[in-house]
Length: 202
Image (cartoon, rainbow, N blue to C red; front, side, top):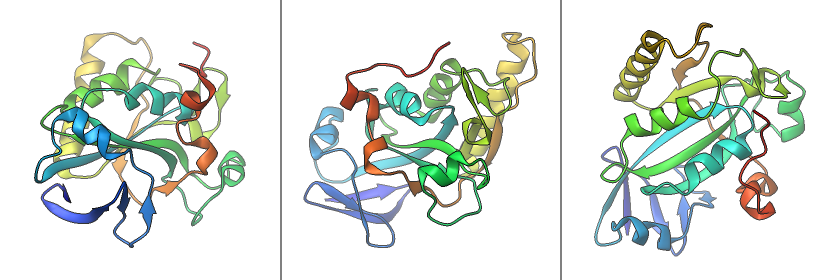
């Protein structure tokens, strides 16, 4: 089965795993997740989105069970050090943000809907902080993959600013997605493994 990403073919499904553009396997969700969205027959067109909104355990859980989400993985993006570890990122010296990369079926779930969920599930007015977590790795950021995502993100931020929901300015970064470094396995679906719904104190 071929997986199309924005009309291209960066990966090929082999068994239950997806190879990234470098030929390395990534632990995406099983084919059962694609069956759940009704896109298992023939070719499924999938898109990718990346968000940072504090502790990536909580952000992943926020998106993971949405109808139309095919895969999630947590990792590090937006920094300078290649292949950083969790300890590297926690040093607040690499510039990376804790983020979640989601693969979704655009026929089931739109990017605008993902943006709405992103804004509603964190405070975009606190620089480098969410709840008790402080540091640049906890910054609010949208890492766009296409010009259309950039335009949608900017428009949604302007709309939120006009809504008057927040007294303080929105500090969310809207920047191009660069290399996404997958976090260590124990971080993947961490809250599900622990039987928790949230790790954040609001």
